[in-house]
Length: 158
Image (cartoon, rainbow, N blue to C red; front, side, top):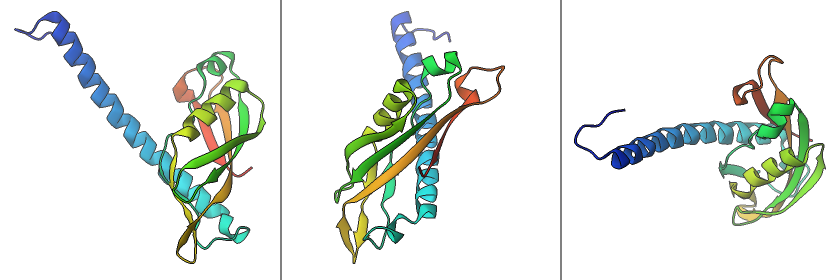
């Protein structure tokens, strides 16, 4: 990109800033897709049937775990099962790894979960804390490709 009348250093900064805005919007769209998919999957599990709540927690914001680059290069697939508390204020507490076959995938799932924010579960209109178990499957796409686009992280019940 060539910007006339603007010093090169400023032009590079402005280009990087514009790129950052572009990518953050794409990231927000991806986050919104993740939140909607997470909530749909959580609703299907009907976790209030086995717990003492009327309304299940609902993810308000968060991002999905990223497929670790090292595992992409090694073509490693994996499975991580996390358990955590959704507190009455909607924050995530006491994350625990119930099962994982990859340290880097486990770390990725924990990093993503640290930023999650929920509308808490409710019982008789009052917020209640609830334990949630969440499974992530890290799967590769075509064996010919080792890119992030060829990998996926699937959510589900454990």
